Amino acid sequence: MEVSSRDMEKYLANPSLRISAGPDWEHLAVRTRLEPANCRYLRIPATPDPWLVLTTGGGPRKTEVRNRRGWSSAFSGPGNLALTSPGKSTEIRWDRGDGSGIETIHVCIDAALFHRFAAENFECDPARIEIIDGFAQHDHLISSIVNSLGDQLRNPERAGRLFVDSAAQMLVAQILRKYCAFPLGLPNRQAGLSARKLRFVRDFVDAGLAGKLTLEDLAASIHMSAYHFARTFKATTGETPHAYVTRLRVERAQELLRTSSSSMPAIARRVGFSSKSHFAAVFLRLTGLSPHRFRGATRCDENDTEM
Image 1 (cartoon, rainbow, N blue to C red):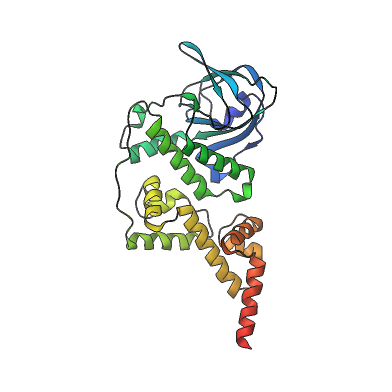
Image 2: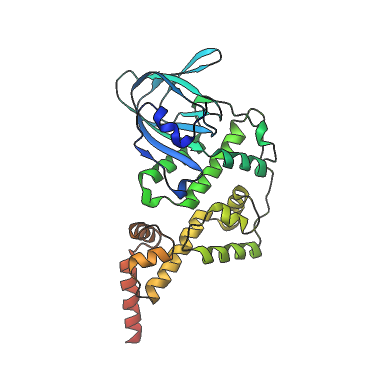
């Protein structure tokens, strides 16, 4: 029996603290959790999606996972990563010993994205892909990405579709490169984006700044795969697509603050922010001023010039 990643919640040891929801999380199901200190036995049905579990807090614990040869054990703690391949159920038990809980972040990656990524970027048949399971791995790249996703989930107003899309692409690339049963390597594509293609991307972003821009949409505007686009775009411009779009949104907001009398919520909506508070936090981070102070300063400058 397989269950969807969204339905996995009822098979876990206890309720999650937070669960991702909404269109920004289309390609990922993310949960932040406090696991019980001890679990005598837990069986989680298979899911069609690759499943990652990163331990982020709590002391070391003995973890045992059942396979065809019986129970395998390892000590795991903060920074350890567990990986379960698509279509495989999990039988697990653990004991921390001191009775205190264990902080984890669970990430399930949409199978459709996983297979499409493999076909587009590794030029292989997705049906041939076999992922090697592990439950006490160390992977600094995946840990960093998963921790960032957990931070986004704990601060919903900071979540952004482009960031989550990019994180999903990087996770798939790392899993295929490092945990595949047979060697895979990304094609060597060193050429950067031409000025013409960069102009196309800029025009596409300008036209859609008020809406939900996705990594797939940006890539499709110049006929590239999402992952290749993200890598090539950063190599060419020095910015990730997410950082680039965020900067353009703030620049457009600055223009509106200087030239219009629109309210802050209206400006936030016009430049694609989910809320006034999210807009204000990002604006302050990039400019050093709150939107209100920026508007006041620019109006003062105009008055001084007129005098």
